[in-house]
Amino acid sequence: MAQDDGDLIRLAFDTLPDSAVVTNARGLIVALNAAARTLRGSRPLNNAEFPLLFDSAPTVDTLRGIEAVRSGDLSEFSVLEGDPASGRVFEHHLLPMKSPNGSFAGTVLSSRDVTARQQEDVRQNARVSSLQSQVTDLQDVLNERFVDGMITLVNALEARDQYTCGHSSRVALIAGTVARAVLSDARDAAEIELAARLHDIGKVAVPDHLVDKPTRLTPDEVALMDTHPLLGETILRPITQLHHVADIIRNHHERWDGSGYPDGLTGERIPVGSRILALADTFDAMTSRRPYRQALSVGDARREIAGHLNSQFDPSIGSIFLGLMSAGEILSERQLSSNGL
Image 1: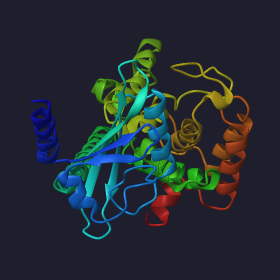
Image 2: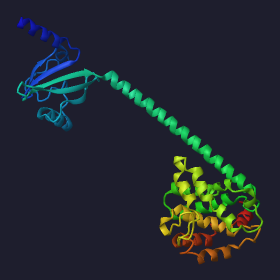
Image 3: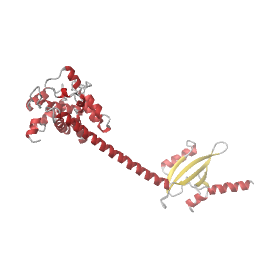
Image 4: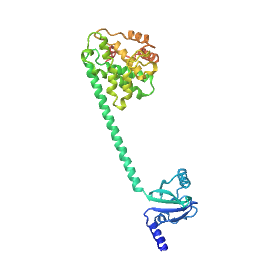
């Protein structure tokens, strides 16, 4: 009867569809089933430190995994191995065997052909990658359309008032020129230029009668107008790619000495884009006509800016700004018009 049981166990061992190899405590192969014999072919069994199916040498990670199983640090170790002859891929699972007294007795290695699964994983990864690319492309299109919509809205806001029409376009041109002179990263400069293009988007919530008021604003009206940087940030913040743009817009009325708004930031705590935008915005405002005053000349605007370095403006960026003005690269509304720009 015992013999019959042994025959039955050997038959079951040989019937397993997966390759199975048994090693003793020294790591030598003592038994393998029919599937393992088919895969291994006629190669000798003795002195095999690890029963890999093919000729590839175990990697350092594989040897560490084997040792961890033998020492009891791991209850199972898995590794993939490719057959260079057939191109098939097998997944090995190494399990420790313990004697009745709990000591290490050897290992059982089962190996399964996972070529089809690996190929499907590759196809699935390709599908996922394609979908991710499509989502990214769609997000880019949506974000581009959002920005285009915001620019159109800014143009419509400025069109309400003949004195501010074209203001954001001019500020963007100036800010982009300064940013490219100050910064080495073209993407950062483009981001600042976009922020300048959208810096007054928050004025969408400001009543029309304040935007085109022919006289100076009252203190209460100024307080209401001063909310537009925060409103602009709120509008743009939901778009992930515009987070830095939103930050620049929020702080473009901060002053170097900390007397600006909304956060009272000082010096280099103010985002560099906001410091550049503040100069561009102020220059265009000073050199453009308003209902309650005439436009300053470029020379007067230059003197005003030079007189407020270290107080209103970043002295380093301000010096670069003044140099660009002297070189004729910073132009007023009147100069742009005379040049046909």
